[in-house]
Image: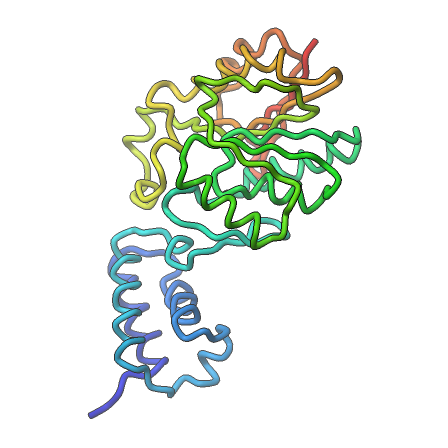
Length: 279
């Protein structure tokens, strides 16, 4: 009886995922198989005729079924690279996007330029922004808040894995509780998908936590809240950096009319980061 080899899985799995409209199907199979067998992708081809055990085969079948149903690859791999750090992921936290990496890099630039020491990350999720900044600035004091207890647990795990000891995590709902201290820099990637847009998203996004994607309204609830609380939450000379929905500049200019603001464009030329400060 012929045993199923690594190459069989790669070929059959790629065909299976392609039929289920998964982009980069072969790469997906390679990465899932690398995780299952604890091998590098190159090693898969060096050992292409190695047969899989029944436990490994069943594990791969489960992963392929989940991927075919639209579950994101990052959740199945349980990890993602975010700039110079790696974070554990699960469906209690958002998968970091390039826009969020841009937000973190802009925060890093600002901290270097202005020697900021106290930083607040609102809605930390996996902790990727707070942890990246903590690794860049070990002398900084970073506070990260998050409403979801499951997300806080994931962020703490990621903080420990990355040995970022200068972060304090708090479970808190920013829509109900305002910061009690002042910060030099406030960063946030809040839920900014409108409910109307949420109902038309790609299928993979429905595997991510809804409350981290949408405010169940027009997508601007958190920005209105920020405009109300930032004057008392920012230190003298402090600033804020926010990730934004695309094509909402006019509304955001009105919301933050009491602040000095500047829009920063993403790689596609869309205004996706808001840099602001009190007048």
